Image (tube, rainbow, N blue to C red; front, side):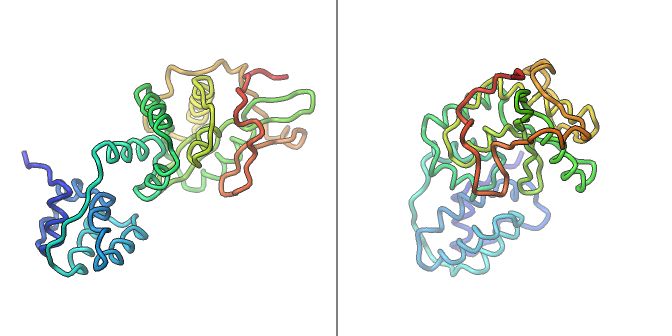
Length: 269
């Protein structure tokens, strides 16, 4: 079995202008972690421009990013600081939990506390990461987004429906997320609970049963669920009779924090 290529080896090869990532070598390309290599080369005046360019174009394939640095950085010896192992681990944890790329994960680490990281670790251990799904057709995204506006917790006295979940599109991947998970993504305080997770799982399962999505990991949402009487599902023809309220608006800086730290009761009032 081929030995894994570490970040130090990639940085050394770039500094020495030696190509260790040959064409058609998927294993070596998989070992390349852009964030770590960019971080290691970011402490030098003669490399910071190239590194910033790769940070800006973080969506490029690993091979393209390596080739760019290899051919645009002048060969010479460079010694740099390095990330502590716990920082590297936390970066991967944030990427896994939120579905972030390297740059967004780095930004999240700036605002997440050590307590936040521990909560994320525990949720990952419990299978609490965001629910990833696939769509039959890209156009289904709008259909799913509209459907989710009609599923949530209802207040019958004023006929208001509070939307529980959203569909999130990140770097070509799709996730069903509870609105409190979205507050966490923004680094805002939130009390995302086991019951919130169960409501999210139930909604994801319903979307899958209706043929709107396909769950990437069906076992993730199979156990922790809520009874359907804890959800209000409006028919499309009823939507004009209700006030549909979202506590988080994707793509808008104006979000409704009023009920963020209140537990959803799961019951209609």
